[in-house]
Length: 239
Image 1: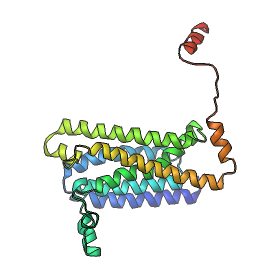
Image 2: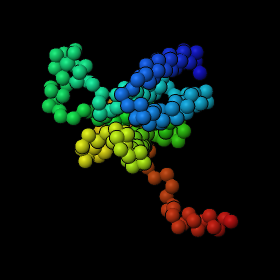
Image 3: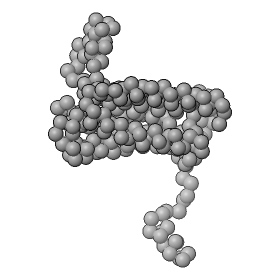
Image 4: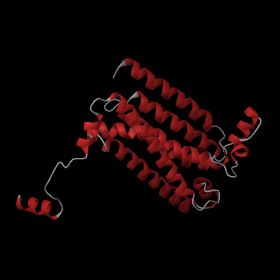
């Protein structure tokens, strides 16, 4: 890895560590903060352990950094109580909810949308470099994984709410009385990923000479023989 790449990653790591420490001080709800940061710790360990043998691009690390910063703000205040209305009131003289006509705190919606918008590209980079996907699949699979992991996280939130229950469970779930909260969160994550992949496809289409051919080749049949029971029969014959 180039020295400039390592330096850039170090800068991001130091900035995030400083933000994490600052927002770890006196969070609004310590138990919820701990729950929100459990996956962050695991994610950070994976990134730190993998950077030597599988470094991502600076673009990917930057997008991950931005998402984690947003998440830490939500963890500090609890998502349903992030005071963005007070911030916009102080800066512009009017609250954002007043301008938009909103009644609930929408910071969680922003972060779910950002999950797709910011993390679909790093997921795409992994697919391209590990699974060697090309063309259509290089855009569809990141979208698919973003959607499925968003669903998994909603199930994780539900399980945590059931296990911990009470005020902590409701604070972590953060539905704010909306029975369609999980559905809207997943839809926003999907929309964010769709926009991200649309931008990447537009950039590649303008810069990549074989874009159309690669896209077409990715949709051609690579193996004409059917699988399923025929593949099982073939494997049994080879034993």
